[in-house]
Image (tube, rainbow, N blue to C red; front, side, top):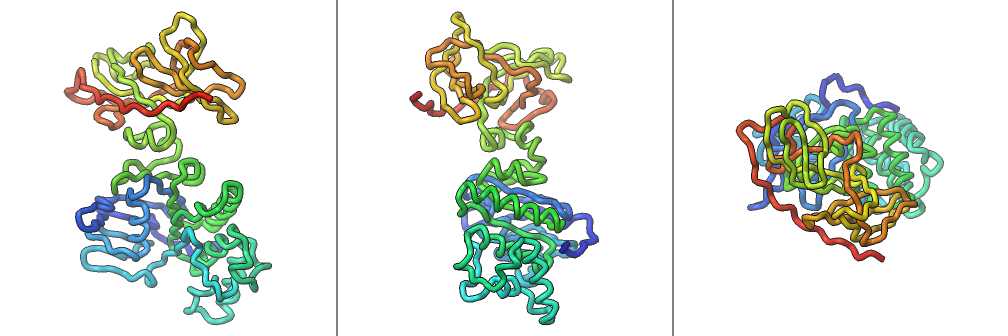
Length: 381
């Protein structure tokens, strides 16, 4: 079963959408365009506005300003506001929200009252086969596992053939092993049906591995909406860099296209000739190389065994700390003197005023750097 073909260039558009709760700005000037069949993952810390955005798209919250368009229809603006039941939106919640007194088949059929009884039965059979639960149609929710309940919730959301499916942390209540399996099954179904979807998550790995694009939110603002690779490798802001994986920041300088910091030359920066600009350089642990050197000023202060790799905390001569991943069989004992370099092929992100820059800022030289916030170093076991 494929969703109905939507003959529009965008399945969902948010233009300048804002929402306040008294003095609190839950969402501020959100701009987002989602293509038909695209899956977006939405991530950010608690209270960043991601669930508020989903609720406004679904019609459960009315925006204070801005326009929301679904499949070419304006569902919310200054004059119009469509109620949730009139929007072509499917919803999947963390707690499944299944009716305990209805069978699986009747739960899935709940939103199909406009169809005739034969059409309803056919549609229910289609979606239950799609999520591989057709053999459980007569069961009740309490007779199902958590993963099966979540697949029923997805089947119910898909049954009316919505233009957009919104999933609000649908896997967070499942244990780690089951979560990965159920997530893979449900994402495969959404892809197979060509369903446009937004999935809210608090899991960085999930956001990067599932989404065609990742939307990172902070304090009610979209900080970056881009491919997983760009969000991780080319973060737009200091917040995105630190939130989407381990990241450390060192004061650095670009002089005549040469990027240097206290560990030495990091890389060349094409297009920055004749510049002398202070920046912060973003380094992730896999970009930091270590080599034992009795004469080096840097020292390993702690390490954490992570299975596939060992995370080393290294204190530099300045007192700043970098993290470095080493293969699981490599462990430098605390106190070991090491030379710290940047792994070959690294193209680190440069920050000015906490925003990434790819070309020299006009009129900036000797930019004053913000002192990095120290983070606690775990005691080595």
